[in-house]
Image (cartoon, rainbow, N blue to C red; front, side):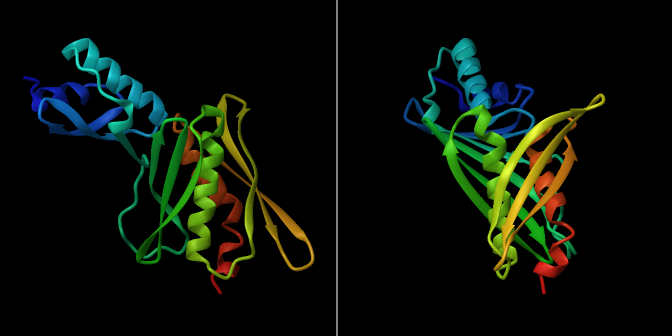
Length: 208
């Protein structure tokens, strides 16, 4: 009989996993809930969980029952904020698609933005950027329509930087704004911060 506690303790030894909760249905694993660091893509975290469970216990866990939640490296506490700040990033892969939830704190509340698309590494930053914009539009309901023109990674000297280009459509013309953030090994959080950096100068106007 598979020991749930032993499996949970073993999976938390993965460098990308911070906590695990497993739900059994008889002798079958029916749910695996993983809290993971944001440095590794959720799809890879799922593969790591599957590989370790098979290698150590001979247990084949269906990837569809594994849910991965990722918290930002510097998750903020609830407090009154003048500008939106990242709280957490959640990525939920399912088969060939993935859904991204970005939670931003602003003033005394939290606001969640969502984006869905292909579960591909090349699409990951774009989905995170789009979810961030969705959260911004939930906060500032009177904003002009916002769109993610482009987002990508660039090398600046010895540093890795995420750069986001945001387009907003006004009544007469469109405006492009650019934001950037150092990656420091956490590209997901850097993508959110790059989008916020692009909009920071406009947020006081949006909030009026």
